[in-house]
Image (cartoon, rainbow, N blue to C red):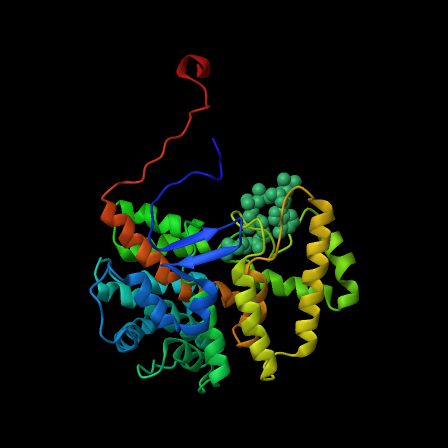
Length: 360
Ligand code: ACO
């Protein structure tokens, strides 16, 4: 029995392949490198949805219309909901979307995080939420709804690259949660809500906020080793490092480091912040190698996510919401794939409690 289900195969999928030994990610036949070089988020959605939903001549327009449609639910964001952590507020608003299995439910679920998270953040800041602009790309509209101004082409490209990079990743915890719910035929909204609940944990999609807390704690490159050693002595894990499947560097870390460098080139990232991150990364890798020589612990996707989303102006408590904006595409495709198998997921447990005669 592996309590983390490591090495257990629970699905056949055509969606993505996480090659942990060689540090490669393939999404529907295309490697991550090729995907981030050529695709926008809408292209990756079309790829993920292929065969699971009827093809759309203009997915970008359909998604723009879905953003406009879901904006009406922002009116339900009362003060108690706005006071919640952003990911919990997002979950509450997403729960207002009805369950269904079709493309219109799917597109509303993709639109939901993109529209609800910026609206909640603006409400928290005492600003009015901005309605979507269906003519913009998904990434550009997210940034516009957050900041109230049109993003630069570099900012849009950086967010697009992030959304593409995280769109799907094998049978991670949130995707598995989505598939378990889909296997009961509860519907796509229920699957996405289960997945979002799994994503928010700090061992999964909740890590990038704490990565920035770590950078702030370190403060200057010269402090990196001492600060990280003290954190490990305290029993803490170093956020943004280690992965269940990758035994080498997570390929998504480099895809995002590329986006961070692009932003730095356009002046959107303070070079000192980038230098601090690079020295913390180098020190963390060296210390983890010393302390865990038989366990390959390398940089994961969350490390450079943190820098990227900070540079794009997302507050750190909303980073998990931005992760959900991308990963929701994968959750939905996996939910459809699972539902199509028609098979309920129902594993077994081994009872280790007392038997009635022992309990008496
Ligand atoms: N810092 C310090 N030690 C670590 C780290 C880390 N980041 N990651 C793993 N280890 C250690 C563990 O303490 C453990 O040591 P032990 O055997 O002495 O107890 C050993 O390495 C193996 O750890 P596991 O828990 O078996 O590794 P697992 O495969 O379950 O962990 C996980 C994967 C949860 C991602 C882990 O590496 C971690 O907690 N990382 C920090 C949080 C993080 O960055 N999460 C984002 C992951 S990416 C994503 O989900 C999108």
